[in-house]
Image 1 (cartoon, helix red, strand yellow):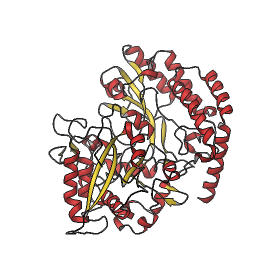
Image 2 (cartoon, helix red, strand yellow):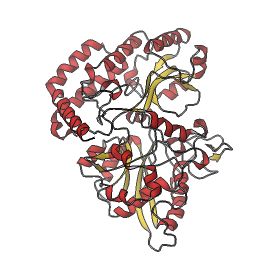
Image 3 (cartoon, one colour):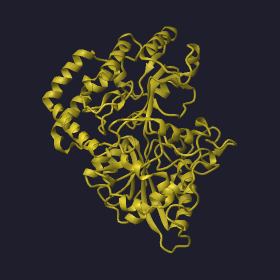
Length: 497
């Protein structure tokens, strides 16, 4: 299979889709407990070399990907008899490209990403992994105890392995650190929406030439707030209040949604938000970095952003599909299932392979620091160093054995592991909605959601009248059928778990 490496313009929209995924694991130069050759037992000197195609998302043009692949194969061919063919697909092209790859046997190991895991399984695209897991190495099982894999299981069978990232998020305001200091706001400070309103108005008065509030993605203030779509990222039936209820509701009828949209509407009407937000194409980093904006809403864990402080409005919580939203699976059409699983174990447990895959080649793509972190070479960034995957720790199979970037600190992976352990989970954790009984209604309601959700979240339309109109259209299109089906499935799931 030819390597697919394509450019993509914006990272933020993808981060919103996947709730700002960030990798997690151990810490420092000895980040993980895995050592050389721990995947499935050494097979050094083997005569048989099996090709395994591995497909991973990226947001950067990885010009040196072949060099990294060659370095990885010097290890995997000798230790395991595996030759890995790494294919990196731009996140903007992921859904279409990955579905094409899964129609045949050109890919063996692939990220389950953007498309819900339940959809892949319903379509027969992924292998059940229970037998492989039961025979996996102790090193692999230590990373993923069986109870952890409920989040990537469908109908009691394991279909994917989570990658290492944050499984929950704080929701709050990112602020230019210099301006935050002027207003006495500190990193990690807890704010109410009233506090944010006061800050935005003060910032707008002092810096009238900047947007007080930039969109997180291209056209909305933030992709999600405090509602759990139960594996459905169109939010056609949700658990509000950070998933701390088991009653499925119409999102547009929840207090959570109405409150956020009401604030957004006030800020839009008062000029705190760009008036052409629905046609914006610039990510918030660009807007704030170029002094065109002061702040933006974001969802995040313990990773840092240079030049920014992060406040908290909604405490950290984990949606039902948090484990499954980005995980790794084996193509049901693979011709080498055993080798594909062996490759999975290698990617998760071999430290040498993990460092190469996640960080690249030392001296070329990164330099080591005395504290156990790494930096991009002087004058280089993730975008132009030739292999910027160190900035994408949240997307690879397992980054906990690699080195953390300097901006995140030497204890980053350990801090992230602790964050995951403490994060509050939705009551529907591990549940994934199957739309097969309401396909027609679901398709019709997606169109309605796409028509109104973004505008309401951006504050560009009147809240009450727009929700009233949307609900009329939802009712005619069968949203109540979707909610009833989702509630029935959730009740059954909770009864079994």
